[in-house]
Image (cartoon, rainbow, N blue to C red):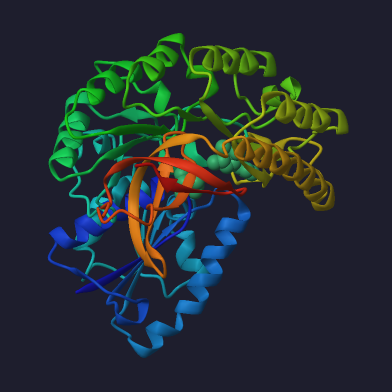
Length: 434
Ligand code: 5AD
Ligand code: SF4
């Protein structure tokens, strides 16, 4: 049978879709190039904010007509909405056939003939020991899951309810996977987890980085997402001593007000966060630091918001994802007093984004004329020769040309040095150095 996967949400979901695709292929299914050609339509969903949920349900509503044309079509709702809503998905959309939570994707190849309205949302304590056949989309870069779930219970966040208890994969299994990827020609790996730096099996996260750093063929190592409370001195030393570990960390701050951070159950104050940033920068002066900020958390005062704006200026992030607070079912924050009007949230969000945009522009402008190491991810034929797309070690997107007088064709997967010739907010342009 032919399957088609549509993915919503974070990197975790993007990578889960690669696993789902691998599972389907191992079950003898083949991938369809469009939803209309599929016998099984799989939605891998996200519910981090209400908007993400609405986006999925409106897409589902639009694709429902495919079932009228092809009554044999099976619709699977997988991912975080599946886990959160479970059987309630069928009440809202009776034409859905199967609901499969993130811990149960292994069942997905065997669903045909079961049902109607089958739900697989049980806790799966074996997930960390499950080896998935992953159908990866990229041959230069690869995601590698090192831990599942999350135990932090940030008061706004739905993830502990959708992805279950935190559990780390055995280090040997992770390292075997990285070895296999290296043999397949992959150059960059990104260790994935909701809280990667709390990884703990027989070894801890810095030790895992050290072992991965020794694997021949891998040139770059990244990791997302880190929690500030678990950013240890040992990890800072690992980032600075291990040559393949890139100088970039995504370290969500969420708010610059320690009062709000307490309400968010983040387990650090703004001062704690700032101290860690200073330690990071003294060990790695050029490290890029990106973050997430939530605007308009319940009870956030004008003073709390002003503290966030000051924090953004004081730290000078390289990039940011900022969101309006969105109440989520079951979470502690949804029961707090003092929910703010959407207009206040929007106003605060735009102030946050405006300040960050100025900072991003200034930081990127300073890179003009600098030399950067790029991993080439794709080469696209342009009017004036090949255009190389890649990223710096600090995770900035770069588009660059080769000098006119070279005939050496640089393939994806190569690492080249470039000079930055132009900068914009979300990318740099450059030319390959001879
Ligand atoms: N409302 C708004 N933003 C949220 N995030 C997580 N939960 C919510 C919510 N309920 C943001 C956080 C997190 C990022 C992935 O999404 O900033 O770091
Ligand atoms: Fe990812 Fe969270 Fe969305 Fe689930 S709810 S897909 S873990 S962002």
